[in-house]
Amino acid sequence: MRRTSRWYDRRVLRIVALLVVCSGCDLVFGLHRDADADAGGDDDDAAVDTQVQSDAPSHDEDADGLVDLVDPCPADAGDAGDMDGDSVGNLCDPSEQSVEHLVFFDPFVTDTGSWVNVAGIWGYGVDTLAGGGGLGAGLAEIQHDIDPTDHATFEATFESTRPLTSLTGVRITFEGGKVFSCLVYVDVGGAQMVNLYEDATLKQMATFVGTSAMHLSLTHLAADNSIRCRARIDGQPATLVDYPAALSARGDKISIVAKDSEIDVWSAVVFATQ
Image 1 (cartoon, one colour):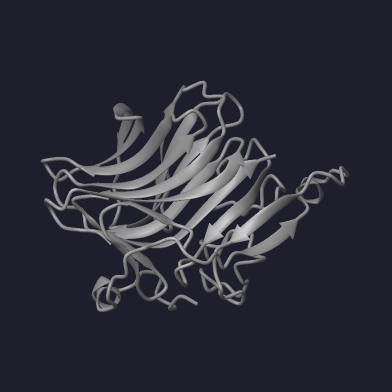
Image 2 (cartoon, helix red, strand yellow; image 1 turned 180 degrees about the vertical axis):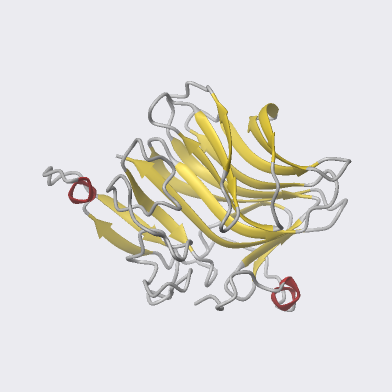
């Protein structure tokens, strides 16, 4: 369980020695949820597996009294209601115009061996995944395969240092190799920007006023196959960046990235549209 204080002291986390992430035994808990029941349907064949990447089934990431396995919004405490009735809480729901279900959640309690170190150094601290480095450290990326997912939303909750020109954020790789990224960039003047990239090309951006701790998500919207980047901090309206990608592929890999920045990641969650 997280402390009552939402954001950790980075110094406490950094006293834990980093362990390089490697492949190993998979301690995945499978929670079989009936997606049609959530949506009010009756197709017995419409079911999904929600993977909770943890060997702590009683873990409560947001300390709201609901363990992660049954929490409709496992990384957001105090979530009030479910506007569209899809069993995904309002705070973490990527869209109120479609019906989503949670298909993957990792609170980074332990190293499950399922994340692949693509670049840089990553390791587990106290209920967190830590990676990256300071200015000049270059790119750090860690990646996880997911079942090919229609209209995926990938959100990570993290805290990071943000030197000038640093980048931190989330990425989805789609079938066929197309990559979209939602990254927080700090320009040479110190302003924070939310940038949406297609492969290595910047497509859209918006100014973001926030703290070092935040939720950052990337969504493949069901309504028009566009891509949405969303940045938010607790208690504040979200900053949205949309791009009309008209993408028809399914997401099959998620990544967390940090360039010239230290990052502590507290959770990763994936939603899919039914």
